[in-house]
Amino acid sequence: MRKYTIDEIVEIYEKSGKLMYDATLSGDYKTNNREGKRLTKIYKIFEADFEFGCQCIDKLIESNNVVIKTEAAAYCLSLEYNIDYAVSILQEIANNSENGIFGFNAEMILKEWRKNGYLKIYITK
Image (tube, rainbow, N blue to C red; front, side, top):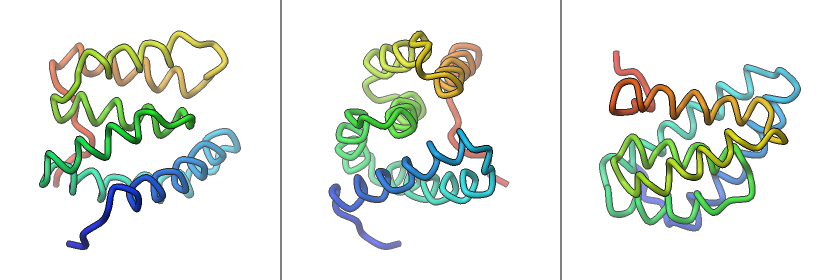
């Protein structure tokens, strides 16, 4: 597995987050799915190296891109890291009507986490 720096991770997320934001608004599910798979591979690195993952998440959650911010907060819930802050971020996103579909996504993440008591980022086969 390739080793990344925190800055490289942030750069990947900024690129993918922009693509996913635009793809969501335009209905381009293929691009959205492709970028989502790319980010899931990186999330698996976070699972394998919790300390590195948390350092990356701390940078990602401060992004101005609502997609990246939502992903980072979801990762916190999944990794059981900085949960209170993650919940507040997701609630803020969900409660801001300007976020539209992205606010709905944040709301569904919170709903799923509260219902199950945990959050899965991907499904294993």
